[in-house]
Image 1 (cartoon, helix red, strand yellow):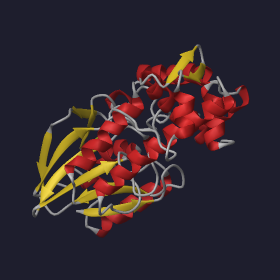
Image 2 (cartoon, one colour):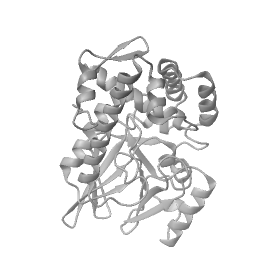
Image 3 (tube, helix red, strand yellow):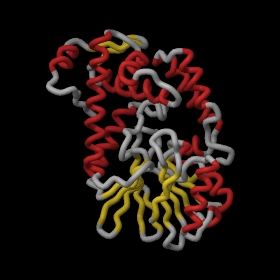
Image 4 (cartoon, one colour):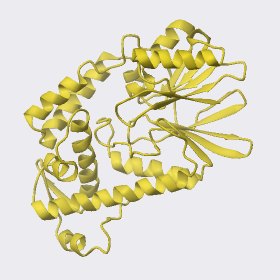
Length: 330
């Protein structure tokens, strides 16, 4: 298996595609985005291993985001490769107009619900203009949690890890006595994947993502091969650190409400992240919403319309906490 690092100046940094080429099949896990530079990089890396787009037999996608799926269609157009993705993300990857329209409608509704200012909405829509599957969308074959695929001496087992994206999956594999995982954006070495904004279709996004992290921590993988940047040599510790990060963020959300009083999601986001530009206009309030929604169901926060306030007794608990951390149940 070869890790191919591909340029991506946005989001979490350089993308990874994973190439399996030592067996009778040529297989990729994720493809990078559809930019011309990325295509040149992937074609060059494949050529270094004696193959090209036309030789790819199967592509496994961790989730629908364009920086992971952008070249799946062009590769399939040249090779006829089978492209696999979780059923929840399949309509978006295939470019289903109704699915994309429904998601954009949901985004617009959330922008208003979160209290996003009009100028920020305009800037965000300009940033997202043209977002979609690209000029050549692939036909896909869907998989579900627990499905397995074998090739090149590997067996990949699908684990559905919704949160960052509705259909996000990780692929477990055991080889030479080592349990490893292709973790997509469920587990990254440097950044904490956005929840709430990255895919507004996800219900209870923080709860689902925390469960995904708990699965990763408890699985005790020997190594994780993430969707961005370098391999992770201690996936359990990394998963635990992200859970800890979200508990610190939960305390910050509650503290913002303690100091500011009843307010909307955008106000909480501004307190946490300050002025936002580009795609972060989506990710900041999205993450704030994911926490507020989770805390509301935990009876720590009460929502009235678009405003949130602390439930009775919570202000004192936040102020008296031994550390700036709020334990999250999931």
